[in-house]
Length: 164
Image 1 (spheres, rainbow, N blue to C red):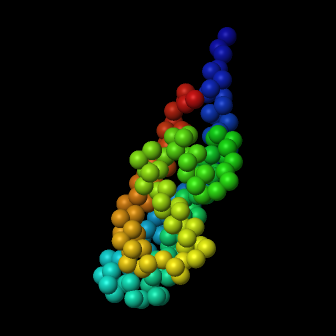
Image 2: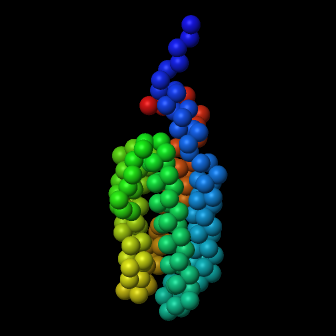
Image 3: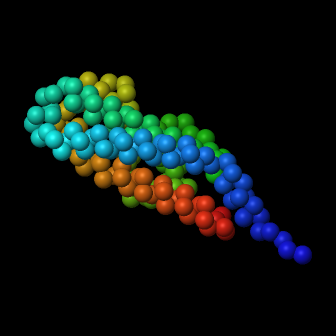
């Protein structure tokens, strides 16, 4: 008689609970936000952007959308795979790193971004536009890395039968 490895059963259950359509939509939202940011930042120099409130607001809105989508991706994976709940944006990214959904190096890069998201939500008018643009240009690569790491995690999770 064959006995199934209980780790496989547990992982099979997770596979049924993770909503791949939801994850795909959220990752698409991140990629669309990145695209909007790149369209604006590639077209205008920082000196011009820093004084254009409409474009700055569009960039800030894109950052908020990206942060929300990232948080929702991580919350979904933590809840469905690991049965973890989260209390805050800082909590979600830290738990994702501890559960190896995100690499430690990406965690270190994104942690300030999640803090900045809170500043935008609760008082965006206080941000220095030139500093915002500098960090935004540097951060776009981190957003792309996030989508790559999530896609790799999901692929590994779905196609590795003995994940613990």
